[in-house]
Image (cartoon, rainbow, N blue to C red; front, side, top):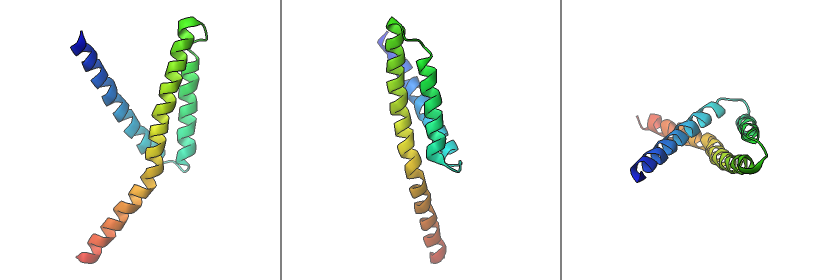
Length: 100
């Protein structure tokens, strides 16, 4: 049982990483990346809220909302860092060009 749980956890972490990278990739290509990402976060939170507000469903919806918010906060940090990283790469390429 433990190995099945570990396998499932590993797969979920892999999916989270892939989706996070995909969202960063898509967001930085938009005219307003923070707004684009905020819209996707709002849509995901709305989907979590649709699970219901009764008993166990409400607890699941709340837990999902917390997980979604944390996920999008991490992606948002990566989106904010992306322009800085792009500037660093461009600077390195200019330096390489100047050396040749």
